[in-house]
Length: 111
Image (cartoon, rainbow, N blue to C red; front, side, top):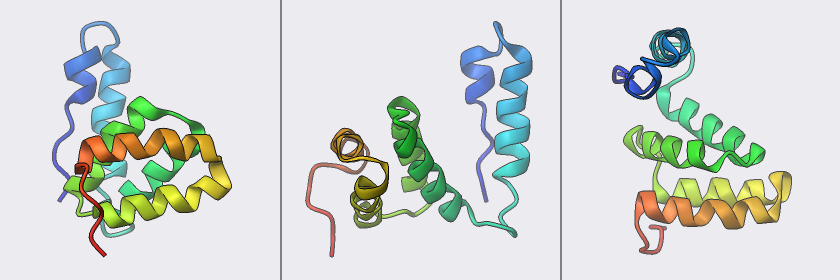
């Protein structure tokens, strides 16, 4: 079950209330909540891949934390980054690994 998202309202509710509502209620409340169509774990992997490919690293770090909460392992996240290095760019992978270490810890991924 996806937890209720309030980041939009927490950060932008006063200055951009419509955007905040769309973020919290539509994107996370309706789209992410359709686990019967695509589990949250899979959505997290897809979202992290898309954000890394675009070089959107602040959002990537936040979604890595969500991915961890959605049972994406450190091994899987590191494999995702390595795989995407060949499709999204080597420098983006170099930028993504430190974020993953911040979220998952600096120890070696489990095998």
